Length: 228
Image (tube, rainbow, N blue to C red; front, top):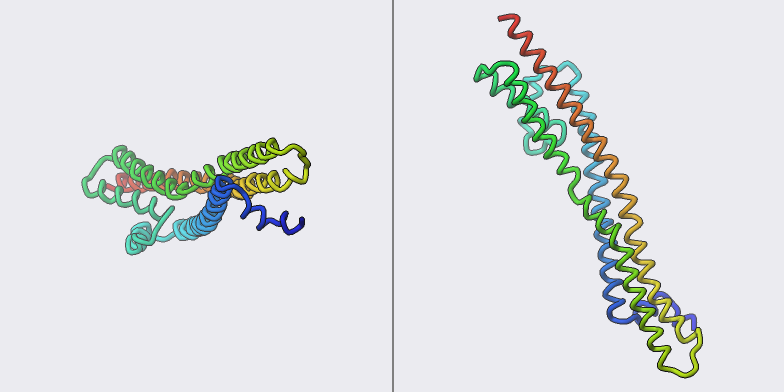
């Protein structure tokens, strides 16, 4: 009886539909862990890049020199460096066209707003997949459980003398689907909530930097006009 009630035996003896449900949940769990690992690495890198770039930005370095450094690594830069590049590029363009300060500032802010939105999209990528896995996996598992239990009771109705021992294996194998649904859902939900918080913090950091940078460029333009 113990061998019959082993996990492997319960899975292999489950109905074909329940086995399909288990396979779907197992695949969802593997996929969620892949996404969790990739997003952990991406968000950790983004946070470190933001700290490093802010240190360089506020170190007193000439903004034109910093722009050239960022531009040379245009294919590798992300996050705050990309926002800076977009804003300073627009600033240079408006300076060449001798645009007034108000128009210059509006153009710089628009460029950085687009850059911030792109970086936020990058940070948000695949988070919806974690949310989907976390929300639907328990229901998929529950479907497998209901189907398995229903099948057990239908088989029970076909015999004259029913006993708990006859339905226990069928119910146990059905409940594995619910357990697998929770196994897939719980890490996905925890990771989604954790990563969504990190994305919000990074987004606020990007937006604050864009505002501060726009103010600095406005001050520089005002000072240049006063000299003239």
